[in-house]
Length: 310
Ligand SMILES: [Zn+2]
Image (cartoon, rainbow, N blue to C red; front, side):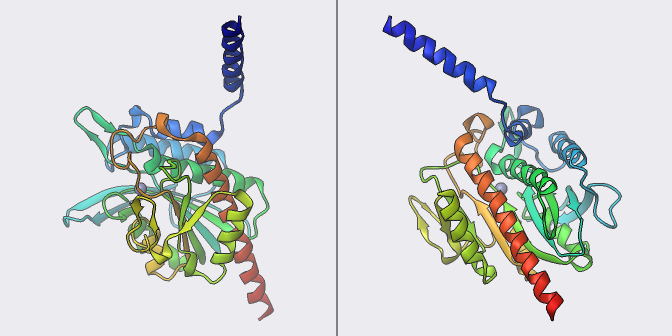
């Protein structure tokens, strides 16, 4: 009898779980990390499918292409690590509503592709960052923002940050006032630590307060990697300033915040799949990412007011 009631409870619980509609970012991450996209390697059909999906989400949110681009796509050719020319395509959109600077949210959509029959799905790296970025885009359109926001899904990050470099070289940084870059790369694997690594805290005087406020509000432990802390059994080498796309913008003097969980056991292996994502942890990180974007918007607005009273 007890077994029966336990079974019944389990069944009811399971049905209840299925009744809850899953969040959009969960749907997005499962699609972007699916076998159909074959690991989204630059130049492959899988990468094209990822782009089509991101474009369609940008269009749904009524975001617009950037000045000088006819669509959400920016094609480029940049020399790779072996000096070979890599051809890639960034997908970028803007939410422009005010005469104000832009916050640039970035997340790379490319990954390692497949080796023979093994697919490197790159669920955490970086379908998780792109899906979080799409969620931030959705929330941006539904909230009142003081500044404008640009959403850039970069290609060929795995080849040496090439999409970000190409984007920075187009002159966009000159024609748009950029306040800061928020880069999202690997957000869904808690590893053994269940904390979030935050880099770039020292790139702007107010970022330290913003980060500790969000840590308090979310109770999500955050580790500032700028000082090169060792984190558990995963050493953080240096300050992670150069490990992802934010490096390109940091080099050009743009303040940045980089959110990511750091290396873990599934990193760059075929085991980085959507089924291994920790949805509870990922949800908390998506929430924190939104708070970072809102916080940056607040700081950007303050700078605006300061400029106007000059
Ligand atoms: Zn990555």
